[in-house]
Image (cartoon, rainbow, N blue to C red):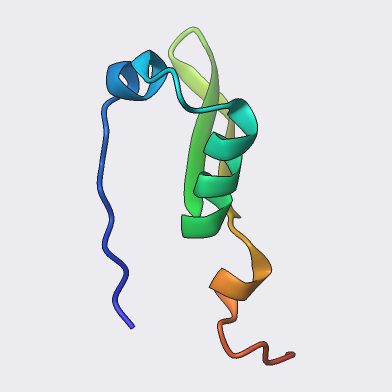
Length: 70
């Protein structure tokens, strides 16, 4: 079952008056969001530490639509 997504810019999202924070979070969890972050600790052009984070935020029924357990 394909899911149609409509993308909006940050300005359009923040400018809309009819959205509450809980509605925005509910919409994000309903469709799923991937958050990616990287942190590099470098001293004198020597890379010492790299931290990477990839997180999937979604409602459980979106991740496992059949409700199947592992």
